[in-house]
Length: 114
Image (cartoon, rainbow, N blue to C red; front, top):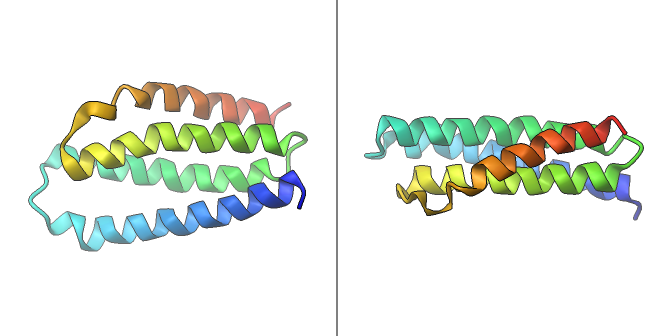
């Protein structure tokens, strides 16, 4: 399997997980006793998760799909992961990873231009 094909498959899995997380946010998490800030964190994580799952589809078609795909995936994990975690647990212990993840997302988009 070549890099483009693998990145495309990862994009599909990530997109499916993003939709599932969005459904949980709309039907389960929304009705919990979470604060408005936790709900906002969850919504932000989910939006970035969906947007960057779509970006992975684009990464599969660029000249360096492995580079762009790995950097975008790492950025999603480091940005969305801590936001989802803090939203669900109210524990900010991983929040320092979010700026690193955001930077990786920027680099991932730039990598698609190479």
